[in-house]
Image (spheres, rainbow, N blue to C red):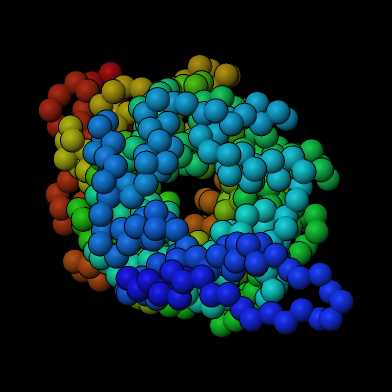
Length: 512
């Protein structure tokens, strides 16, 4: 600390009165000089000057780290008593500053002042780079980091950097697992209050954001912004790597991870990494078994709200996606996209074993099991295995005796719908599908397709035991029972077993 010695002395200036002028009062001149010459206190650490000793002492606590005022509720310490007083309002719940427009209350007057700009629309702080305006000075300072690229807040765990301290604090909860905001309806917890607020709209059904073009409502402002692009076609945020445009900045930021390869969210159970937190959270439910989104019609639960939304269309019958070629409707957009390949003839997925092409990925994955012999779905009752889940589901009806599909002509029941469809041709005698080579007619299109392979000599399905080929997968399966000695069909009167259903039917006539 340096004291200005000159301020201790009262220096009287020499003054020569002009002739005929009244002499000035020396007392007044001395008082004015004294008023100007005050003590100043200079900080030896940073060179900052203060006129008052009290302010200087307060400032020195920045360097010494001294915080003499401690909260007796939570132990947080402060450099000034005024700051402690403000802090105590967190514990007491006191909010003395109330908005006269909407009744919202605040702990500090400065917060009320900033809030009032929501009602007045005042945004006095503008960015000199892009002209965007803000209601608070702090907001424009934070915004400037977008232009400068400055990210001063770094995570000590993973090294990720952030433009705001609040974002770092929120990010740290990924590492700590802390979720301080619980939902009082379903006990689900969230890392921040905004996520809880959005989640609560699932329970309340609230959709406060409405499109002024078509009056469609949304629970989230970002969803409304995304929807507006349907009407405006405006996508102002462009990727500087590939030129792709986006409706909002966060979608562009998410897209940029494709170019950078960044996957900051890693599962500690299986090591899988994800670009987005929402994908990481969805994945974690595989390990926890959590399905927080329940259908209020049938009680079925889902890991994601999007899956519940799609499921609800089963009950409502809603099919919002329409094919512009044949007007067929779909409940899921992806199904429409795959359906369109029927019209375009597009088959983008090719088998590298036999060259056969498919319209979607799941079909080629299923087809590849013919070549690999993989049968991942096993019956727990008889240990029979299947290449696709649907076949296992149908097979289980053998054990349960369930036959939900009944013919309205003769009341005969069937395990699967396709068998009922085949059976109905017995009553209608209708065979609308004819072979162009030999004129033979079939009641089912699939039967015609299988038949036509006789003329084309196409045999896509090969037995790995003896290299014999077949025109259909069902013929291959029947043949493979020669090698496996499998006889799944048992006579209902004796213990004799057969590899084919027609053989057991013929045999049972002996008993009858």
